[in-house]
Length: 440
Image (cartoon, rainbow, N blue to C red; front, side):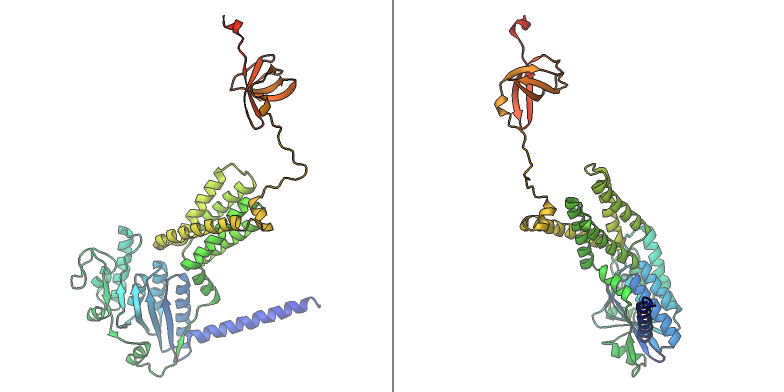
């Protein structure tokens, strides 16, 4: 009975935390008559799509007066943007997009999905050429932009020009360029409905002044995923992961390797949760870890498992960032490799006297039972006789000493007269003595 008390307390704490979290989510998503502001800031990913979908559903349930997207983004994942677009189309609450600074790439699609659009002075919208920009991808995304614009009675040709360089919009761009509109041109082209200096102006122009404004928050899981997938944090996780594997190669103790695997696990896990990765990335990562650990602990020195595992792990890391962020991935990986090499050098050179570092660098200390090989340099030029068949290694008797010898590749029978030609450490090289009378 006593053992169950802590469990009951723990269960109660979980229940309180769950109720608090649910209440917080309800308050964040708005209540009846409130205006819900959803930040579309930073990289558009699955975490953001979760936030928008959850907030719109709650706003529909509670009967909020309006939903406002506060848009300031360079873009992100098209899949996440289309999920947000579809959520906007399903919304029973009026949705307003306010571009406070920029709505580029996937952010432009989200903005166009809103029935009402306002832009701040100096803001811009467009620049939505997909990566990769092959014919199929451009065609699909162009159709998505056009249909979204038409749904809200906007110019489909201008929406297409944001995606396709071949779409004509001579009033706003030259042929072969991607369309990006400033706030004034966007209003003139009826992409935007008005120019507002602030969110308060947006509320006033939509007759929402006096309403309670509530900005939604990300859940803990969404925050962790978005934080860990930022380039800086991703680079740090990769550095810790690679440094751990490098130290594991030195120690083979398992601790450094475990830390490295955990860092990589956090890297891949958060990228998968955020929507950047898929099953292929998981398979490559597992294959990579398996190959490296097999090389370290099962067949050390073989080479092939470690090389293949390293290649698979590198591909997994590249793909984990997502194709649209390939160049960011290359930059982050390159920075992480340089940082890993520097930290590894510091760990093994600057602090060599540290007891832990001695284990890492395998500092060579000769124990009392250590016996060095015999110095045979005095045998150079001496003669003797092979006492065994030399194939090409064997045994010879030289100046009364039994010595392990090597020929230059010759196979010599026992009893062959020999001369020592050179000595390299413990290796004694010999050659047969040619008697003058045998030359005749």
